[in-house]
Image (cartoon, rainbow, N blue to C red; front, side):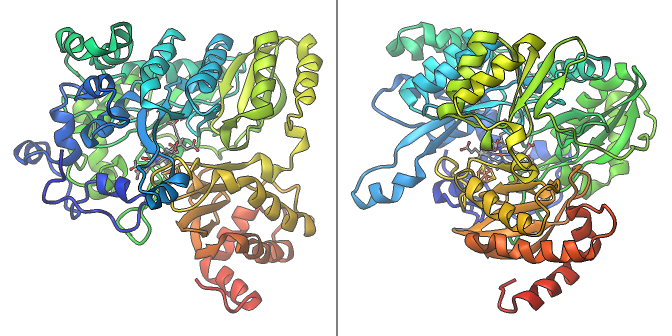
Length: 609
Ligand code: SRM
Ligand code: SF4
């Protein structure tokens, strides 16, 4: 589909101009009412969804067409619902262009793994697929899933079919639907943790789209001869209604996480719906449900901004699914379908008010709810290293730098999982937890990991353990800077500054992203580095480690090599002026933007702000 008359390329979101063109941007206007939405002719991605015959489009036809190595723009948009993003190698694009060659296209595929739980066989199957059909690695994401990069179009059907054989799916891992539901990763066998996991899995199943398109294309489709796929797929279409989503699905991606105040590993308030389970001892009293979290923004577009979720109501345990469904339906009907940059629930709420939201949710659910219960202070638990599972078994958190499982770490995990068969939990910190370990296997596992040269949690300083980076270059079409590939040297350089001031044992989180979309949740940590333009980052400080306060932008365009020096000015002030056991994030927040800027100006007058 070509862009409709209102389609403009955004100027500064993306490094990839093609990706920028794919985004439909229209001037911001009030969110449409359901009636208004039905009168206006759907455009852009909305029109693609509506015409897609429930997410089929021409994906099967393009798969069968061996003459092309890529999908059309319409199918690019639909593929997301199938967990697949078309990408190209950004490292080789320019040199190839200079030689008159086309880009090297491939796809990224993302699984859907509620709460990040995998069996050992599932993990081994995914690892093997990473070797055979992707770029030789798998990657743990910040929402507890596994991604494959560098999958060639011709390998995609096999990849998807084998993921299905492993009893996993990529369906609804991306797209305008409820995405992977996150839960606290600790595999502790107690009422609290088991409840969180069960609930995450129930919500995830409840919101899986009902269309049989995924099955037809990737499961049935993979069983038929490729040239016959087009005909066969057409014959097999079984139309199922989408009772929750309708034919246009949601206006935009929709994210849900669950946590307890005792462990906010999921950064629950950064989600469209953040569910905070409140226990009285072992008894689940119910949930405070918060709405309107989301981090994506665009530089220099103040109408886009990160936001933490606002507590909306309290619901008893049995009422949770009902209220979550009502919230999703309100967003389905009132979310902005004209401007995708204004289409998340956070904007619906800010445009219409939290009281409107509560009233609308109660109308859709057909009942009233209690006010949200006050929340105790949040904590974030360190799941790396060995921990007691409370059932006689142990779990081991293994740091995975930027979530990338490759090289020696990948070999080590393969050997450990094959030999000891632990359960696998993908953590929101991009790390891997081995669960259900017999205490007598502890030494053997540790020795096996050491033999492969794996760095264990006890070898790392807090900053190394608590730093995240998104993939950015070379795969992400929206990246303005590096992130994953510079994480280690950058973290080491910042750590050296901390060490020189005796601060290297401080618990400080550092989150790096290659653009302002916020995939490694940079606005919800102590320090955020957000790709601004090639080689330059915006520096954010003043958030809290527990994920309950957003940080603020201190400097706009800091050269990558100057980041440690800039932070060192703040570390020096922190050492001198911190109050009692105040954390670095709390200190920056207390001092505020102006005073911190004065400090930087005094130390380094020539800095560009
Ligand atoms: Fe993200 C788009 C990677 C978590 C906000 N994200 C992308 C894409 C698909 C780029 C694209 O649209 O072409 C990235 C693929 C890069 C690649 O090469 O793999 C991408 N996002 C990721 C992952 C893999 C980062 C990671 O380091 O693990 C995470 C996958 C999670 C998963 O398994 O589902 C990931 N993305 C997030 C998060 C964090 C979270 O959800 O907890 C956010 C911020 C929270 C939020 O949604 O507001 C996030 N991603 C975005 C946005 C901005 C959305 C917005 O409202 O403006 C985009 C761009 C978009 O949607 O237009 C985006
Ligand atoms: Fe890509 Fe990183 Fe930006 Fe996400 S934050 S869109 S992964 S560059």
